[in-house]
Length: 473
Ligand SMILES: [Ca+2]
Ligand SMILES: [Ca+2]
Ligand SMILES: [Ca+2]
Image (tube, rainbow, N blue to C red; front, side):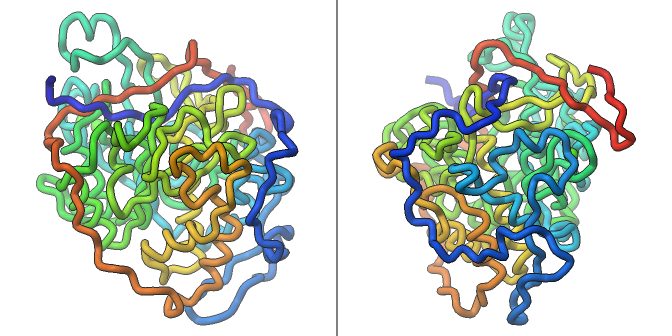
Protein backbone atom coordinates (compact mmCIF):
# COMPACT_ATOMS: atom_id res chain seq x y z
CA UNK A 1 0.00 0.00 0.00
CA UNK A 2 1.33 3.36 -0.85
CA UNK A 3 1.87 5.87 1.84
CA UNK A 4 -0.70 8.36 0.68
CA UNK A 5 -3.57 9.26 2.87
CA UNK A 6 -6.60 11.16 1.93
CA UNK A 7 -7.50 14.58 3.11
CA UNK A 8 -11.23 14.70 3.00
CA UNK A 9 -12.76 18.04 2.48
CA UNK A 10 -15.71 17.27 4.58
CA UNK A 11 -18.32 18.98 2.51
CA UNK A 12 -21.00 17.91 0.20
CA UNK A 13 -22.60 19.95 -2.47
CA UNK A 14 -26.30 19.93 -1.89
CA UNK A 15 -29.27 20.78 -3.98
CA UNK A 16 -30.04 24.38 -4.56
CA UNK A 17 -33.61 24.21 -3.38
CA UNK A 18 -33.94 24.95 0.25
CA UNK A 19 -37.05 24.07 2.16
CA UNK A 20 -39.08 26.93 3.41
CA UNK A 21 -40.45 25.11 6.41
CA UNK A 22 -39.33 22.47 8.82
CA UNK A 23 -38.79 19.34 6.86
CA UNK A 24 -40.65 16.42 8.32
CA UNK A 25 -40.54 17.34 11.94
CA UNK A 26 -41.39 14.44 14.11
CA UNK A 27 -43.24 15.21 17.28
CA UNK A 28 -41.69 12.19 18.91
CA UNK A 29 -38.32 13.88 18.63
CA UNK A 30 -38.36 15.98 21.66
CA UNK A 31 -35.69 18.34 22.71
CA UNK A 32 -34.68 17.55 26.19
CA UNK A 33 -32.22 19.15 28.46
CA UNK A 34 -32.87 22.70 27.39
CA UNK A 35 -32.88 24.70 30.57
CA UNK A 36 -36.09 26.55 31.10
CA UNK A 37 -34.21 29.50 32.43
CA UNK A 38 -32.55 30.58 29.21
CA UNK A 39 -32.18 34.21 29.93
CA UNK A 40 -34.89 35.99 28.06
CA UNK A 41 -32.54 38.80 27.34
CA UNK A 42 -30.70 36.54 24.98
CA UNK A 43 -33.80 36.16 22.92
CA UNK A 44 -34.84 39.75 23.04
CA UNK A 45 -34.45 42.18 20.20
CA UNK A 46 -31.42 44.32 19.83
CA UNK A 47 -31.45 47.35 21.97
CA UNK A 48 -28.98 50.09 22.35
CA UNK A 49 -28.42 49.09 25.92
CA UNK A 50 -25.95 46.55 27.07
CA UNK A 51 -27.74 43.65 28.64
CA UNK A 52 -24.98 42.13 30.61
CA UNK A 53 -22.53 44.12 32.55
CA UNK A 54 -21.13 42.51 35.59
CA UNK A 55 -17.74 41.53 36.79
CA UNK A 56 -14.59 42.97 35.42
CA UNK A 57 -13.85 39.67 33.80
CA UNK A 58 -16.85 39.78 31.49
CA UNK A 59 -17.35 41.95 28.48
CA UNK A 60 -20.59 43.69 27.88
CA UNK A 61 -22.45 42.37 24.90
CA UNK A 62 -25.69 43.52 23.39
CA UNK A 63 -28.94 41.73 22.97
CA UNK A 64 -29.30 39.49 19.98
CA UNK A 65 -30.58 40.25 16.57
CA UNK A 66 -33.49 38.71 14.80
CA UNK A 67 -33.56 37.86 11.14
CA UNK A 68 -35.95 40.66 10.28
CA UNK A 69 -33.43 43.15 11.57
CA UNK A 70 -30.89 42.23 8.93
CA UNK A 71 -31.24 43.10 5.27
CA UNK A 72 -29.28 40.22 3.75
CA UNK A 73 -31.84 38.87 1.27
CA UNK A 74 -31.02 35.18 1.69
CA UNK A 75 -31.29 35.22 5.46
CA UNK A 76 -34.62 33.44 5.32
CA UNK A 77 -32.68 30.36 4.15
CA UNK A 78 -30.32 30.51 7.11
CA UNK A 79 -32.29 28.25 9.43
CA UNK A 80 -29.12 27.20 11.21
CA UNK A 81 -28.83 30.63 12.82
CA UNK A 82 -32.23 30.47 14.51
CA UNK A 83 -33.08 28.79 17.79
CA UNK A 84 -35.65 26.35 19.13
CA UNK A 85 -38.56 26.23 19.07
CA UNK A 86 -38.45 28.05 15.73
CA UNK A 87 -35.73 25.71 14.45
CA UNK A 88 -35.22 22.58 16.43
CA UNK A 89 -31.60 22.14 15.37
CA UNK A 90 -30.82 25.84 15.27
CA UNK A 91 -27.76 27.22 16.98
CA UNK A 92 -29.25 30.47 18.23
CA UNK A 93 -26.26 32.24 16.73
CA UNK A 94 -28.39 35.02 15.35
CA UNK A 95 -29.66 35.82 18.81
CA UNK A 96 -26.12 35.77 20.07
CA UNK A 97 -24.55 38.09 17.56
CA UNK A 98 -22.45 40.64 19.26
CA UNK A 99 -21.64 44.01 17.83
CA UNK A 100 -18.74 44.66 15.48
CA UNK A 101 -16.92 46.36 18.32
CA UNK A 102 -16.46 43.08 20.08
CA UNK A 103 -16.21 40.66 17.22
CA UNK A 104 -13.72 42.42 15.02
CA UNK A 105 -11.07 41.85 17.63
CA UNK A 106 -11.32 38.09 17.12
CA UNK A 107 -9.29 36.30 14.44
CA UNK A 108 -10.53 32.99 13.06
CA UNK A 109 -8.24 31.06 10.72
CA UNK A 110 -9.90 29.22 7.86
CA UNK A 111 -7.29 26.59 7.04
CA UNK A 112 -8.59 25.31 3.75
CA UNK A 113 -8.34 25.67 -0.06
CA UNK A 114 -7.70 29.38 0.06
CA UNK A 115 -10.18 32.15 -0.45
CA UNK A 116 -11.93 34.15 -3.15
CA UNK A 117 -11.41 37.64 -1.87
CA UNK A 118 -13.41 38.86 -4.86
CA UNK A 119 -16.70 37.50 -3.58
CA UNK A 120 -18.81 40.54 -2.88
CA UNK A 121 -20.19 39.06 0.33
CA UNK A 122 -16.94 37.91 1.90
CA UNK A 123 -16.27 39.30 5.33
CA UNK A 124 -13.16 40.91 6.75
CA UNK A 125 -10.04 39.24 5.40
CA UNK A 126 -6.63 39.46 6.97
CA UNK A 127 -3.45 38.81 5.00
CA UNK A 128 -3.08 35.05 4.96
CA UNK A 129 -0.63 32.59 3.50
CA UNK A 130 -0.47 29.79 0.96
CA UNK A 131 1.28 26.71 2.36
CA UNK A 132 0.66 24.37 -0.57
CA UNK A 133 4.14 23.15 -1.47
CA UNK A 134 3.44 20.94 -4.45
CA UNK A 135 3.40 23.14 -7.52
CA UNK A 136 1.01 20.93 -9.48
CA UNK A 137 -1.47 20.67 -6.64
CA UNK A 138 -1.07 24.36 -5.88
CA UNK A 139 -2.29 25.40 -9.33
CA UNK A 140 -1.07 28.95 -8.84
CA UNK A 141 2.24 28.55 -10.62
CA UNK A 142 4.43 28.23 -7.56
CA UNK A 143 4.82 26.56 -4.19
CA UNK A 144 4.37 28.44 -0.97
CA UNK A 145 3.66 32.13 -1.23
CA UNK A 146 1.98 34.91 0.65
CA UNK A 147 -1.17 34.95 -1.49
CA UNK A 148 -3.86 32.54 -0.24
CA UNK A 149 -6.17 33.25 -3.17
CA UNK A 150 -7.93 30.09 -4.33
CA UNK A 151 -6.98 29.53 -8.00
CA UNK A 152 -9.37 26.58 -8.31
CA UNK A 153 -8.81 22.93 -7.47
CA UNK A 154 -10.37 21.19 -10.44
CA UNK A 155 -9.00 17.92 -11.77
CA UNK A 156 -9.36 17.10 -15.45
CA UNK A 157 -9.03 13.81 -17.30
CA UNK A 158 -5.84 15.21 -18.82
CA UNK A 159 -4.40 15.64 -15.34
CA UNK A 160 -5.25 12.08 -14.51
CA UNK A 161 -3.92 10.67 -17.74
CA UNK A 162 -0.61 12.48 -17.54
CA UNK A 163 -0.03 11.33 -14.00
CA UNK A 164 0.77 14.78 -12.65
CA UNK A 165 -1.48 14.31 -9.65
CA UNK A 166 -1.88 11.43 -7.24
CA UNK A 167 -3.21 8.27 -8.81
CA UNK A 168 -6.43 8.15 -6.85
CA UNK A 169 -7.67 11.59 -7.84
CA UNK A 170 -11.00 11.80 -9.58
CA UNK A 171 -12.14 14.23 -12.23
CA UNK A 172 -13.83 17.07 -10.42
CA UNK A 173 -14.77 20.71 -10.65
CA UNK A 174 -13.32 23.40 -8.46
CA UNK A 175 -14.87 23.30 -5.02
CA UNK A 176 -14.32 26.83 -3.68
CA UNK A 177 -14.41 25.01 -0.38
CA UNK A 178 -12.53 27.58 1.67
CA UNK A 179 -14.82 30.33 0.46
CA UNK A 180 -17.88 28.27 1.37
CA UNK A 181 -16.54 27.63 4.86
CA UNK A 182 -15.57 31.27 5.33
CA UNK A 183 -19.04 32.33 4.22
CA UNK A 184 -20.75 30.21 6.85
CA UNK A 185 -18.37 31.63 9.41
CA UNK A 186 -18.26 35.28 8.59
CA UNK A 187 -19.93 36.44 5.40
CA UNK A 188 -20.55 40.15 5.44
CA UNK A 189 -23.70 41.06 7.32
CA UNK A 190 -26.45 43.59 6.88
CA UNK A 191 -25.00 44.69 3.54
CA UNK A 192 -28.17 44.01 1.51
CA UNK A 193 -26.37 41.15 -0.17
CA UNK A 194 -26.70 37.39 0.10
CA UNK A 195 -26.29 35.83 3.51
CA UNK A 196 -24.97 36.81 6.90
CA UNK A 197 -22.09 35.03 8.53
CA UNK A 198 -22.55 33.29 11.86
CA UNK A 199 -19.92 35.55 13.43
CA UNK A 200 -20.00 38.21 10.76
CA UNK A 201 -17.44 40.70 11.95
CA UNK A 202 -14.65 38.42 12.99
CA UNK A 203 -11.48 38.74 11.00
CA UNK A 204 -10.93 35.80 8.67
CA UNK A 205 -7.35 34.59 8.39
CA UNK A 206 -7.17 32.57 5.15
CA UNK A 207 -4.55 29.85 5.31
CA UNK A 208 -4.27 27.74 2.20
CA UNK A 209 -3.18 24.13 2.69
CA UNK A 210 -5.08 22.31 -0.04
CA UNK A 211 -5.17 22.53 -3.77
CA UNK A 212 -6.00 20.03 -6.46
CA UNK A 213 -6.51 16.61 -4.92
CA UNK A 214 -6.00 17.97 -1.44
CA UNK A 215 -2.81 18.63 0.42
CA UNK A 216 -0.16 17.17 2.65
CA UNK A 217 -0.08 16.72 6.40
CA UNK A 218 3.21 18.63 6.45
CA UNK A 219 1.61 21.66 4.81
CA UNK A 220 -1.38 21.35 7.12
CA UNK A 221 0.83 21.31 10.21
CA UNK A 222 2.74 24.37 9.04
CA UNK A 223 -0.52 26.14 8.21
CA UNK A 224 -1.97 25.44 11.65
CA UNK A 225 1.17 26.59 13.41
CA UNK A 226 1.47 29.73 11.32
CA UNK A 227 -2.17 30.57 11.95
CA UNK A 228 -1.56 30.66 15.69
CA UNK A 229 1.46 32.92 15.37
CA UNK A 230 4.11 30.24 15.78
CA UNK A 231 7.36 30.19 13.86
CA UNK A 232 7.32 28.35 10.56
CA UNK A 233 10.56 28.09 8.65
CA UNK A 234 10.61 30.14 5.48
CA UNK A 235 7.76 32.47 6.42
CA UNK A 236 7.40 35.58 8.48
CA UNK A 237 5.52 35.27 11.75
CA UNK A 238 1.81 35.85 11.31
CA UNK A 239 1.17 39.23 12.95
CA UNK A 240 -2.51 38.40 13.50
CA UNK A 241 -2.57 35.13 15.46
CA UNK A 242 -5.87 33.31 15.35
CA UNK A 243 -7.79 32.61 18.55
CA UNK A 244 -9.85 30.02 16.68
CA UNK A 245 -8.57 27.67 13.97
CA UNK A 246 -11.20 26.12 11.71
CA UNK A 247 -10.21 22.84 10.09
CA UNK A 248 -13.04 21.68 7.83
CA UNK A 249 -10.80 18.91 6.59
CA UNK A 250 -9.18 15.69 7.60
CA UNK A 251 -7.42 12.51 6.61
CA UNK A 252 -7.74 8.85 7.36
CA UNK A 253 -5.66 7.55 10.21
CA UNK A 254 -5.02 8.10 13.90
CA UNK A 255 -3.59 11.37 15.05
CA UNK A 256 0.15 11.04 14.78
CA UNK A 257 2.72 12.76 16.95
CA UNK A 258 3.63 15.63 14.62
CA UNK A 259 -0.02 16.61 14.26
CA UNK A 260 -0.74 16.20 17.95
CA UNK A 261 2.30 18.22 18.87
CA UNK A 262 1.24 21.02 16.53
CA UNK A 263 -2.22 21.07 18.02
CA UNK A 264 -0.87 21.10 21.54
CA UNK A 265 1.43 23.99 20.65
CA UNK A 266 -1.23 26.16 19.04
CA UNK A 267 -3.63 25.48 21.88
CA UNK A 268 -0.98 26.47 24.36
CA UNK A 269 -0.57 29.64 22.30
CA UNK A 270 -4.25 30.39 22.89
CA UNK A 271 -6.02 28.96 19.86
CA UNK A 272 -9.15 26.84 19.97
CA UNK A 273 -8.92 24.13 17.29
CA UNK A 274 -12.22 23.10 15.69
CA UNK A 275 -12.30 20.30 13.14
CA UNK A 276 -14.71 18.18 11.13
CA UNK A 277 -15.46 14.54 11.89
CA UNK A 278 -15.62 13.69 8.18
CA UNK A 279 -18.34 12.45 5.90
CA UNK A 280 -17.41 8.84 5.32
CA UNK A 281 -20.14 7.26 7.49
CA UNK A 282 -17.35 5.15 8.94
CA UNK A 283 -17.04 3.72 12.45
CA UNK A 284 -14.10 5.65 13.82
CA UNK A 285 -12.88 2.83 16.02
CA UNK A 286 -12.12 0.93 12.81
CA UNK A 287 -11.40 3.83 10.53
CA UNK A 288 -9.80 6.67 12.44
CA UNK A 289 -9.89 10.17 11.09
CA UNK A 290 -7.65 13.10 11.93
CA UNK A 291 -7.26 15.78 13.17
CA UNK A 292 -10.62 14.77 14.67
CA UNK A 293 -8.95 11.89 16.52
CA UNK A 294 -6.38 14.21 18.10
CA UNK A 295 -6.59 15.40 21.66
CA UNK A 296 -7.31 19.06 22.33
CA UNK A 297 -9.55 19.60 19.32
CA UNK A 298 -13.30 20.10 19.11
CA UNK A 299 -14.50 17.48 16.63
CA UNK A 300 -17.75 18.48 14.97
CA UNK A 301 -20.36 16.24 13.40
CA UNK A 302 -23.28 17.49 11.36
CA UNK A 303 -26.90 17.53 12.45
CA UNK A 304 -29.82 17.59 10.08
CA UNK A 305 -32.52 20.20 10.32
CA UNK A 306 -34.46 18.11 12.83
CA UNK A 307 -31.45 17.82 15.11
CA UNK A 308 -30.54 14.25 14.25
CA UNK A 309 -27.03 12.92 13.74
CA UNK A 310 -26.61 13.12 9.96
CA UNK A 311 -26.17 9.71 8.38
CA UNK A 312 -23.07 10.67 6.41
CA UNK A 313 -21.02 11.58 9.49
CA UNK A 314 -18.21 9.36 10.59
CA UNK A 315 -19.26 8.10 14.00
CA UNK A 316 -17.64 7.14 17.25
CA UNK A 317 -16.43 8.54 20.51
CA UNK A 318 -14.23 11.14 18.84
CA UNK A 319 -17.34 13.23 18.14
CA UNK A 320 -17.46 16.14 20.57
CA UNK A 321 -20.47 18.15 19.45
CA UNK A 322 -23.13 18.37 16.74
CA UNK A 323 -23.89 21.49 14.73
CA UNK A 324 -26.20 22.06 11.79
CA UNK A 325 -24.60 20.63 8.69
CA UNK A 326 -27.67 19.87 6.66
CA UNK A 327 -28.59 17.09 4.30
CA UNK A 328 -29.51 17.01 0.61
CA UNK A 329 -32.41 19.36 0.11
CA UNK A 330 -31.85 21.08 3.43
CA UNK A 331 -28.33 22.42 3.24
CA UNK A 332 -26.82 25.65 4.43
CA UNK A 333 -26.58 28.50 1.96
CA UNK A 334 -23.13 29.94 1.57
CA UNK A 335 -20.75 31.70 -0.77
CA UNK A 336 -19.70 30.02 -3.99
CA UNK A 337 -18.38 30.72 -7.45
CA UNK A 338 -19.83 29.67 -10.77
CA UNK A 339 -16.49 28.65 -12.24
CA UNK A 340 -15.99 24.94 -12.68
CA UNK A 341 -12.26 25.53 -13.18
CA UNK A 342 -11.00 29.09 -12.78
CA UNK A 343 -13.17 31.45 -10.78
CA UNK A 344 -15.74 33.48 -12.64
CA UNK A 345 -15.87 35.88 -9.75
CA UNK A 346 -19.64 35.97 -10.08
CA UNK A 347 -20.32 36.04 -6.34
CA UNK A 348 -22.95 33.30 -6.33
CA UNK A 349 -24.40 31.23 -3.50
CA UNK A 350 -24.96 27.50 -3.10
CA UNK A 351 -26.52 25.30 -0.44
CA UNK A 352 -24.03 22.78 0.90
CA UNK A 353 -24.09 20.11 3.51
CA UNK A 354 -21.50 18.10 5.42
CA UNK A 355 -19.40 18.22 8.54
CA UNK A 356 -17.27 20.87 6.79
CA UNK A 357 -20.26 23.14 6.90
CA UNK A 358 -21.11 22.34 10.53
CA UNK A 359 -17.58 23.05 11.75
CA UNK A 360 -17.50 26.83 11.16
CA UNK A 361 -20.67 27.20 13.24
CA UNK A 362 -18.75 25.92 16.25
CA UNK A 363 -15.82 28.16 15.31
CA UNK A 364 -18.21 31.10 15.11
CA UNK A 365 -19.60 30.25 18.52
CA UNK A 366 -16.11 30.10 19.98
CA UNK A 367 -15.35 33.49 18.43
CA UNK A 368 -18.48 34.99 19.99
CA UNK A 369 -17.52 33.53 23.35
CA UNK A 370 -14.05 35.06 23.11
CA UNK A 371 -15.57 38.41 22.15
CA UNK A 372 -17.91 38.16 25.13
CA UNK A 373 -15.11 37.25 27.51
CA UNK A 374 -11.55 37.65 26.23
CA UNK A 375 -10.12 36.05 29.35
CA UNK A 376 -11.43 32.64 28.38
CA UNK A 377 -8.76 30.15 27.43
CA UNK A 378 -9.24 27.33 24.93
CA UNK A 379 -10.12 24.77 27.58
CA UNK A 380 -12.70 27.17 29.04
CA UNK A 381 -14.27 27.58 25.61
CA UNK A 382 -14.42 23.83 25.17
CA UNK A 383 -15.98 23.11 28.52
CA UNK A 384 -18.53 25.91 28.20
CA UNK A 385 -19.51 24.73 24.73
CA UNK A 386 -19.84 21.15 25.89
CA UNK A 387 -21.62 21.94 29.15
CA UNK A 388 -24.21 23.91 27.23
CA UNK A 389 -24.91 21.40 24.47
CA UNK A 390 -28.52 20.41 23.99
CA UNK A 391 -29.49 16.79 24.11
CA UNK A 392 -30.10 15.35 20.68
CA UNK A 393 -33.74 14.93 19.79
CA UNK A 394 -33.68 11.18 19.57
CA UNK A 395 -30.75 9.72 21.40
CA UNK A 396 -31.21 6.34 19.73
CA UNK A 397 -29.78 7.97 16.63
CA UNK A 398 -26.54 8.52 18.49
CA UNK A 399 -24.92 5.24 17.71
CA UNK A 400 -21.77 4.19 19.46
CA UNK A 401 -21.52 7.27 21.61
CA UNK A 402 -21.50 9.55 18.58
CA UNK A 403 -23.29 12.61 19.83
CA UNK A 404 -20.72 13.98 22.25
CA UNK A 405 -22.08 16.97 24.13
CA UNK A 406 -25.14 17.08 21.90
CA UNK A 407 -26.27 19.97 19.75
CA UNK A 408 -24.43 23.24 19.70
CA UNK A 409 -26.37 25.92 21.58
CA UNK A 410 -24.60 29.19 20.96
CA UNK A 411 -27.16 31.17 22.96
CA UNK A 412 -26.34 29.30 26.11
CA UNK A 413 -22.64 29.02 25.46
CA UNK A 414 -22.15 32.69 24.67
CA UNK A 415 -24.25 33.71 27.64
CA UNK A 416 -22.22 31.40 29.83
CA UNK A 417 -19.02 32.87 28.44
CA UNK A 418 -20.15 36.41 29.15
CA UNK A 419 -21.26 35.68 32.69
CA UNK A 420 -18.49 33.34 33.77
CA UNK A 421 -15.62 34.44 35.88
CA UNK A 422 -12.67 32.39 34.71
CA UNK A 423 -11.49 32.19 38.29
CA UNK A 424 -14.51 30.02 38.96
CA UNK A 425 -13.62 27.56 36.23
CA UNK A 426 -11.52 24.49 36.92
CA UNK A 427 -7.89 24.41 35.97
CA UNK A 428 -7.08 22.34 32.99
CA UNK A 429 -5.29 19.07 33.39
CA UNK A 430 -1.87 18.94 31.86
CA UNK A 431 -2.01 18.63 28.12
CA UNK A 432 -2.15 15.08 27.00
CA UNK A 433 0.86 14.01 25.06
CA UNK A 434 -0.92 11.15 23.41
CA UNK A 435 0.05 10.98 19.82
CA UNK A 436 -1.93 8.03 18.64
CA UNK A 437 -0.26 5.33 16.63
CA UNK A 438 2.25 7.56 14.97
CA UNK A 439 1.80 5.53 11.83
CA UNK A 440 1.44 8.43 9.48
CA UNK A 441 4.39 10.22 8.12
CA UNK A 442 3.84 13.96 8.05
CA UNK A 443 5.07 14.15 4.49
CA UNK A 444 2.51 11.65 3.30
CA UNK A 445 0.33 12.98 0.55
CA UNK A 446 -3.17 13.93 1.54
CA UNK A 447 -5.89 13.98 -0.96
CA UNK A 448 -8.92 16.13 -1.11
CA UNK A 449 -12.19 14.39 -1.60
CA UNK A 450 -15.47 16.09 -1.92
CA UNK A 451 -18.41 13.79 -1.85
CA UNK A 452 -20.98 14.91 -4.31
CA UNK A 453 -24.59 14.16 -4.84
CA UNK A 454 -25.14 14.14 -8.54
CA UNK A 455 -24.16 17.26 -10.37
CA UNK A 456 -22.77 20.26 -8.69
CA UNK A 457 -25.46 22.84 -8.75
CA UNK A 458 -24.40 26.40 -8.83
CA UNK A 459 -26.99 28.91 -7.84
CA UNK A 460 -27.01 32.58 -8.44
CA UNK A 461 -29.94 34.20 -6.82
CA UNK A 462 -30.82 37.46 -5.20
CA UNK A 463 -27.53 39.06 -5.93
CA UNK A 464 -28.28 42.53 -4.82
CA UNK A 465 -26.01 45.43 -4.30
CA UNK A 466 -26.78 47.79 -1.54
CA UNK A 467 -28.06 50.23 -4.15
CA UNK A 468 -30.78 47.70 -4.82
CA UNK A 469 -30.08 46.62 -8.36
CA UNK A 470 -29.84 43.01 -9.32
CA UNK A 471 -26.56 41.92 -10.75
CA UNK A 472 -25.99 39.42 -13.49
CA UNK A 473 -27.19 35.87 -13.09
CA1 LIG B 1 1.50 29.04 -4.35
CA1 LIG C 1 -0.83 31.39 -3.84
CA1 LIG D 1 -24.40 39.62 3.34
